[in-house]
Length: 237
Ligand SMILES: Nc1nc2c(ncn2[C@@H]2O[C@H](COP(=O)(O)OP(=O)(O)OP(=O)(O)O)[C@@H](O)[C@H]2O)c(=O)[nH]1
Ligand SMILES: [Mg+2]
Image (cartoon, rainbow, N blue to C red; front, side):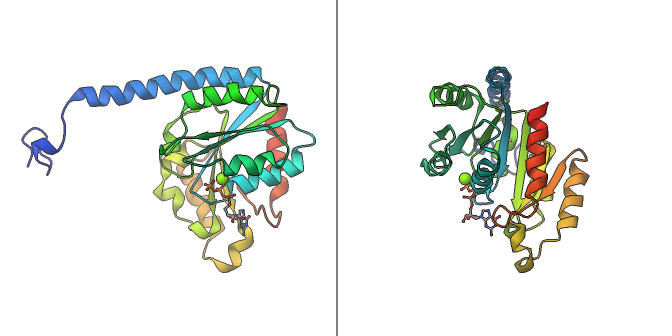
């Protein structure tokens, strides 16, 4: 038992040094300040930015591919991809003919505002990357760390795919508290999984009543119109 705080750890196993907390707070403050600058930079590019957060494999890149196919002719779309390793997602997006930058974090579980600052300057050098209507930022796949870091986005989008199960809003509340849009993806798989859509929606709305909730399948196209309408509306403002 630790005499200082009464917890179960031995004194040498943890710290009561308030400087540890201060360092974390100043790192977050620096990130928030850089995110503010990024938002201005993105607006100068003419764009609205959407930060996409989800578990690995819930369909972020596929949703982007299908969105570019549907709207790439009418809206100028750019993408910043975030992954721990590889430029595979950027290659998939590049094949759709829009400007894209891959950021690799080398192990970090989220993008931060300083990386986006660099990414914006690199994107501007890509053909068609300097003036955009929509900038998508695909964050590193997980529902935990990305929720803490403002990147300078205007909208935050959290996805949960049908095979992951409906309990994610309750288990990972910060991602849902801090988002404006919640997408239930891969609805073509609903016949094969136990995913009560209305219950999942209700649970998410209980956490954040302002969430805009959509259910869609990128492969079948079901529910896609609502998503495209949302994007057009976002760009019109
Ligand atoms: N059935 C079905 N499969 C989908 C759908 N969307 C994506 N997938 C599949 O899900 C897998 C993962 O899709 P991605 O788009 O790469 O997922 P991601 O979220 O970008 O993954 P990470 O970047 O690794 O986090 C792929 O095999 C896709 O073909 C969908 O609407 N329905
Ligand atoms: Mg991806």
